[in-house]
Image 1: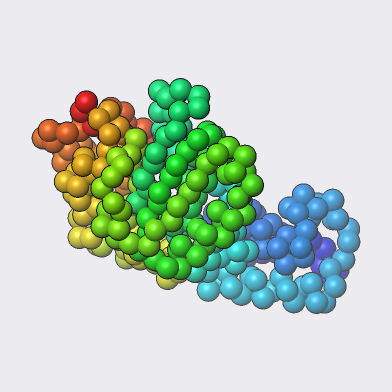
Image 2: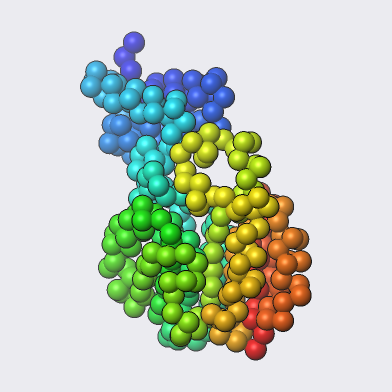
Length: 295
């Protein structure tokens, strides 16, 4: 058989489906083939009658073997799409999910409360690949973002992604400062921030056994585990974040699909915060909460 790019895609897609891999199978196959052949996904079909060389076929097979070991596609190709960005990712850093774009949307919509050239200060806890700060900087000028992570590996990827978009940051007078540390402990109390944002680890420990091996065997548990209840980080935020926010500032967090009510109850008795908005993800699940600090 003359193996052309579309034939390779069809073979890989069918095989992934038969082996019980999560969908979309064709998209994964296209990503593997385009990466191995160093062509775009569109070129796969533009070159529909071009036979692949034995060396090209070997490269494709090597990537497919990695996928059979449940290595995430994003790690295999070394990047993922988020918002309007292409971000470098790999072992040691959480792969940004489409659901987290809902968090970005919630923050961007709050920007309209500030004048056009007003500096906005943001503190992010748990930056990973710097996906959220870079997405925000693509939407607004005059942002001063400080972002914290415990993982040196994650911060290495964050630094690479920030460097890749350095010119865009400069054009909009945006700054992103990364800090290695745990929660607020590495951040000076002053000045206060307009926003505190986070996509924290929120998966209860008991749920890990039910997750796909793509996640449990490869992605950093540090970025996923929210402790026994999944609520450890929110409990900390409710207690510690008020002294870091300006009056009227917003605390905006992502959460698990069934945690909205529990987090709302946690903050209900707070003398500092009131629930301002709830948002659903693209699948219709509760995903983001916006709290405002009392003036």
